[in-house]
Length: 167
Image 1 (cartoon, rainbow, N blue to C red):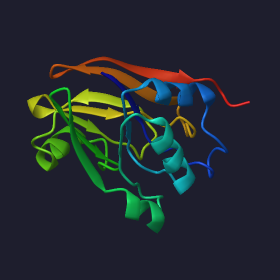
Image 2 (spheres, rainbow, N blue to C red; image 1 turned 90 degrees about the vertical axis):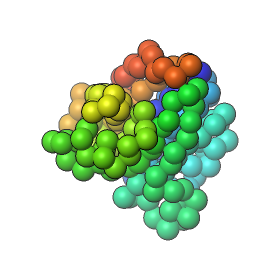
Image 3 (cartoon, one colour; image 1 turned 60 degrees about the vertical axis):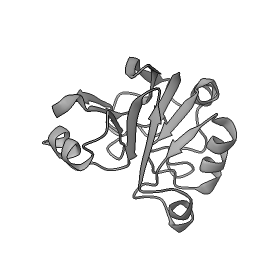
């Protein structure tokens, strides 16, 4: 199963539109995870129209309309893996232990907020993934998103994709 992991799209405040290359990847994924900070409902509508399956949460920059449509935490099982999606996990220091305590039954935790790509393993094997942002790289060299494959209880081919600079 092909997965796409994204967060912090911030359209239209940080970008007018999502990159075409990124949208093609959304179309190709079997499951799309979005860890919040959509900013507008039109972007959520776009993902709902394009994604075969969308697992999503709201973030700290999402207003009442998005909070009505999206949970703060989403839990789903995909190919025998238990995923949790949340926007914010707190400071980097101690993140793995803190997240294991907060989500003891998760195999994979998808999070956003920092716009800093992150891929680590915590206590008990918890995999923590932050895809960065496809639109707002902040101090990172590139705007980014993640893809992976899930099969029979295993997450493989986790890959950070760098998007070309906006023109």
